[in-house]
Amino acid sequence: MAPARTPLSLYVHWPYCSFLCRFCAFSKARVPASGVDHALVTRALLAELRTSLAPHSKDKELRSIYFGGGTPSLAQPAHVAQIIEQASRLVPLAANAEITLESNPTSAETNKMAAFKAAGITRYSIGIQTLDDGVLQRMGRLHSGAEALAAANRAASLFPGHVSLDMMFGFESQTVDQWQRELETVLAHANGHLSLYQLTVEPGTPLFRDIRAQRVKRNPDDTLALMYETAVALCRSRGLAHYEVSNYAASPESQSAHNIGYWQGRQWIGIGPSAHSRFIDPASGTCLRTVCIPDIQRWVRSCLEHGHGTAKTETVDDAEARQEAVVFGLRMLDGLSNSRFMRTGCVSSGALSLAEYLRVDQVQRYVRDGYLRSSGSLDHLAPTERGLQVIDSILLDILP
Image 1 (tube, rainbow, N blue to C red):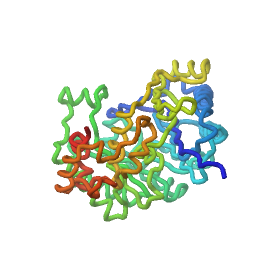
Image 2: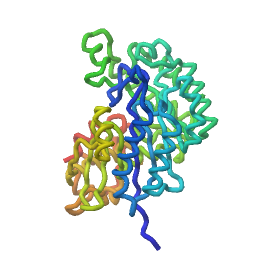
Image 3: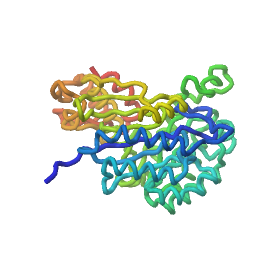
Image 4: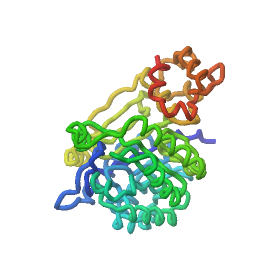
């Protein structure tokens, strides 16, 4: 019997957006006036895909593919199909592989959903953000609340049980009651999964400049905490279980397999401008992190001339690998088992147990106070619902 193949994920970054949201700090560019040269960008993606995936063809299996951005629903479905087909030729696709595409809920993009399903997409993620048309306009979004709900309904008919709706809370002057009413409406249209993110103010964004100039006010921390707690309670009452800091699902099958791969330390390859990868190099056995060139035109030239757009490659050392295993593992309510921690793939200097690695006195304090759950021997460590809300502060105390 052939040995089992190691799980691998693929991230594909489509860099263009029809508009630039005032809060967004992701790598992206506005669609140029002359339009996007779809064929050229796809050629570059396919070239980088071949170079990046070929070394993993003998012992890996693709468990998930994720088209993110930017706005990948602006890509041509035929080009998405080419990328999926090429990826599956290089590394076998698992029988139940999850293939996700992010989309904005404009009418034009909603009309392409069926074509994306035919291209091989199995899970659809829609960036609604809010149903408030005034907030949408102020934040630079092009869709309306009505279009968002129409897109959610259309996606539910094409991808039943595998639709994720993304929402944000904490907009200026938003009240807890307003957030609750909006979330109740979205839950009535949900089909398996919600991602609910607190609005974050990232340096360099227009929103950051507005707040610094006092043109926009931030919501108080106690209001944001109440909004978070409202989301947890309301989703639970509607049958969506909280499984990660910002994510809720109706069943394990509706959870984001791709994102769980990140949180559980799976190796992944990223292609496209600014894309990141983290994998064990098959030739050397070294754990590597790579970052692609952020500038789109330079990235395209590099891919077509050299087969890849890698800007930087660095080794992930044991200390970093262990820390990431804990930081990402404790983002999930299921937490982190000691056996998985000791199998952290990027560690080369010998295994440490959770009890040997963490500050056990601090872990025990948080267990006593109801923020963490653990067996006495630290065979398993997980946040409680209460602890998940403040997990960043907990990590500062329990990490060495």
